[in-house]
Image (tube, rainbow, N blue to C red; front, side, top):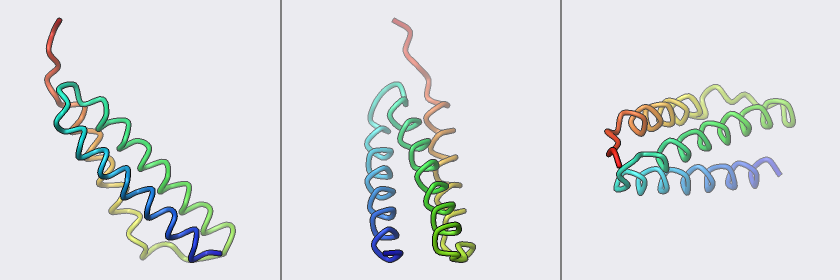
Length: 85
């Protein structure tokens, strides 16, 4: 069960990374910010789920790098110059 949930969490994060990358072509950066925030929430949720549900040590799982990437994506999406109507 733990292996299956880990694969599902990884697949969700990869899809959100792809959405975040596609959001770069948008002019306003909202897609990137939303995908980055969802990626951070999914990662934190999985870390809590794995540590509570399976007593698994998740320190070396790369979760900190995924969250750091989400923060950078969110900041990058917020730094986009928005066009005034």
